[in-house]
Image (cartoon, rainbow, N blue to C red; front, side):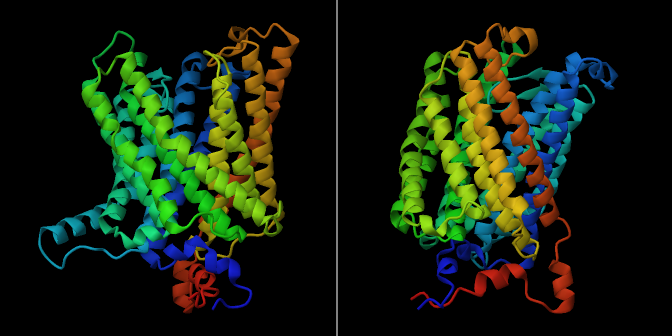
Length: 500
């Protein structure tokens, strides 16, 4: 039976990945550190972007602001949307792998390949760190022509492109390791199942990127070339991001003390379906004209097919469970606040997705709300997990739930302002006079957008500071010297009990 006072921990899905040795925990912590550092660098670039649009100050910058602005914007987007999410994938796949046996045979080719993969994966975070430097450096050196294409914007210079390649390789390694260890019985563990599905979808995205680059004919407009290169893989990456969201929801629900959302078999089916759909994505590249409208629409349809049913089922099931166990949720509990705010903001993004316009700011309203919902869930996940990975106790201060509410409320206002501005015809991807803010409605809407953005930035900065402090100065070596058990294992094992 379950020990008194430990009912919540017995349902905590992180028990599935608690048997992690010091090396695996340190590797997962490095992935978390890369994600936090990516957000910090994105914040610095956001500040420089604001300065580049400020009269007088813009002329004091060490770069011509006209050329620096779009280049810094490219690096800011890639760090805050691509590197941040993929670092979370690296962390989750590392944790899931740590709970599984190697699965390789004692000898033979499989054993040799398994050892080679293990060795290479040990260097994955170093490769990812080098990739981040290459993704930031060109903007600061004022190199490369910017391409603000969808999903993975590009600076057209070898340094930046090499950074993308290294990042793709670095994240592929822990994904391959997890899949090499995976067994059917392990799919009964929710976080292992969803991490494995995300790993499969990510590898399919890499295949789509490779095919897109190979099959796209060079066009006069390099932006159009990059758009077609990254369109297919970019859509599959959104499937990966959605699976990361589900993983965070599951973990947050366990930490918040909620009951099971779905039984293991239906849950595995729900998260496995998007991965299977993602595996079919490369076929679009192979059997449809790369530059045709049909291929363009096919990837959009595939994205909707993969995500709409899964997110509807799991989102509603999670909301239902939160309502049933609402007495366990507190708006001042970081885990409960992250879960509730993520569900609300992601739901708002889904609603805006059904009300899109043509080329106006309703489109960024949709994806800012959706991405904000994913960010909130990952914020909660990192705030709970990073201290334990560093062998520290989870923080319980007021600042942790406050930053979640600031970010959630701010991002909600930001998205609402963009949506209202879009209904009045304000074009997306414009700034300054090009926005044509010639009415009170447009001015008020963009004012709401700006206020919400400022509030969200405050919450984001607080997250980077607190999560960075949690990750910095791991106590692994200190505990070894003092003969103490790790906080990670103590928290995971103290309430494990006998649940039979």
